[in-house]
Length: 306
Image 1 (tube, helix red, strand yellow):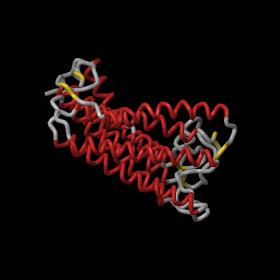
Image 2 (cartoon, helix red, strand yellow):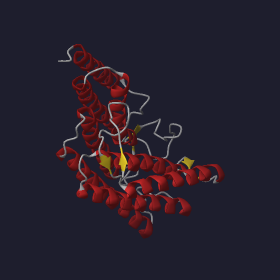
Image 3 (tube, helix red, strand yellow):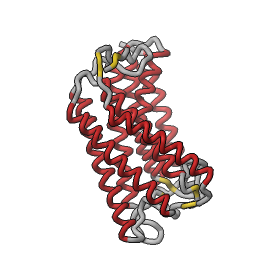
C-alpha cells in the first residue's frame, strides 16, 4: 500500500487515499526493461539483418512499448477510487498474453525468421496464430479495464477524461492491428503492415516505417500511445497553467477528439499508399484542417471559461 497525491498538483495519481498497485503489471514492466536491454545488446553484437533491419530491433521495440504500456495500466488501476477485481484480473491476463507475445518474438529471432505474418511452416503458422489470439485476448482485457474506469467516479475530472479517452483511443489503435492481419500483399499473401509496397523495404530510422509506401504501423503506434499522451497532457495542464478544472477538462476533451481524428487520418493516409513524410495535397489539407480546427476549439475554451 502507498499514498498518492493530487494529479492536478503536478503528481501522477488523482487521489489522496491509499491504493494498491497491480504487482503482476509492475513485474511485467521490469521484465520488459530487462528484455529491452538484452535486445539492445543483441542489436550491437548480432549482425543478422531481417526485413531490412537488425534482427533484434523488433524485440527491442516490443519490449520498450510493453514496458510503457504495463506501467501505465498499473498506474491507472492504482488511482481508481475503488479496487476493481475484474480490472485487476484483466491486468493479470494482459501480463500472461504479453509474455506469450514477447516469447514468440524472441523465439523467432533466435530461429532467424519473422514472427508476424509468417506461415512458412506449420510451426511458424502455429506461432502466428497464437500471436493473433493473444492480441485479441489483450484487446478485450483492456476493454474490461476501460469499463471499470467508466463506471467509477474519479474525483479529478481532468484525470478522468484523460484516463477514459486514453483507454478508448488506444483500443482504436490496437484495433488497427486487425487491418494489418487482413491486408493483402503484392504477392497475394494475407498479412502486412505496408500498403502498396512489400514489407521490409526502405524505412525510417529506428521505427522502420516505410518511406516508399503507406504504413499502418504509424496510426497503430500513435493510437496506442494515447494511453500516455493524454494523461501527460492532463498533468501538464495542472502543473503549468492556472486554468480552472472546467477549462482544463474541456481542453482535454478537445485534445481527445483531435487525437482520435489524427489516428483516423494517419490510417487513411497509409491505406492510400502514402509514406508519412510524403503526403499529397489532399492529405496536407486534411491535416491542416485538423490543426486549425483544434487550435480554434482550444482558443474558444480558453476565451470563454464559464
